[in-house]
Length: 395
Length: 228
Image (tube, rainbow over all chains, first blue to last red):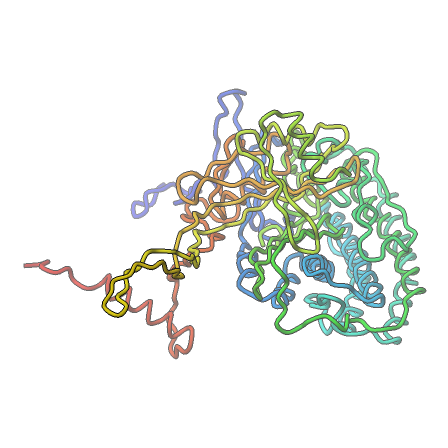
């Protein structure tokens, strides 16, 4: 029975019918395709993100990522502020890893202005950067297990470890997530020896956590059945699509910017770059666990070698900072891939152009190719294995 | 890695008439760039990717830059004959005067590509392309067929700057919504009047409130001669 006041049948919606899951006929295949919008409020998307998918039964035949819900024109804001005033905004890009965002931006400005960084500051940057990588990788693996249906408990293992690291960040920078710690030519505050002892304690406990977490992943039969052979990314496609970070190395391409560019002081540490073989979801997560172990090695070396001295270049100019006209592109190996900042200076106090090259955004280019032919339930895992943060995708 | 001059020579040898130009960068970073002509850009890009020695297989960053019309005031020395009367006798002498002349340098949109090599681990090589102007000649060739990673980033440049990429497989807005007009990253972009009621406006908010009221009144005022 229809309501005469509104004239539509029960179950239908007025307005945009696309979200309704209406049936459309694909003239080529002759079968009925179901168009579904996964998101923007879907728990697996880790933010406000939508995938417009066309389904043939359970199988994905088309998938278009739609984003921009969190867009605040970060780059325009950067053009309206002084160089230093943009530093706190970079925390909000990838809000899981604010310290590596700070680092990439500081590195680009230092390239633009030709600034030096004191040795102790470089060590502090490496320590906080690798701690960030540990907590990011732990979290992304935790969310994988969560997305697969193991609600709560396994994720809390990751959160427990992250909590310890965030406490360290709070003690050092005053904030757990929005750290705003780095400056052009050094770091904002020096670390006390007590803080370094605390870090040593936390790092000493990390290998045990890694063992425990790896066991959870390697010996879980359900997890292996769900992830192995799913979402395979071939190496040549990954290179062409600009995929970087753990997702690229899981496909067997050896490219780690810490090794390639040898920025900061990464040439002093001994660590390996783990490589995957199959390029599937399982490999992408195993790579993260192996990288977590390598980060622990770097942390141990850095904590042993850290020298005394200033944390800011005494010649660095804080007020009235105006780099000479020119441009620079600086990049680091952020936990999610290559994070780059491209700056053009016209000699003024604000950058003429301020561009962020976010790893999550570029890694999404290939999402459709990885998902085609898989079931709807696998899309959740494939998206999780790319490891995106919407603050960075939408900017 | 080859120097930029060597790369330029290699491109000219492989793609005759490529017309690649080196743009110097005075910053300490020393990342100079190559300016490509739009007509030969795709061929040059394919050469850069497939050449054994360069092997620039990884396109990292694609972005736009807006360079609006620039008014340039130049001081020019002009010499012209001047007639003077000295002690009742007319004399013609030459005088040099400084004059300020203004000219407008037309603006353009620029697209910047940062290339690296994963196989040979070098880079960056910076490519640039410029549009004819900022209004009706904004077409540039898309490099998405050469490097897949340009797909979303070129869509972003199209969305925020308004550069139209020929040959792009799916050129739609990506960060702004489909019905949006204008390109917000352009330097002359004016944000829409989205003022919300504020009981005690002050400073900047007061200025926005007054501007908002003025437009509201202008819209509400009856047209002259209307209703008679």
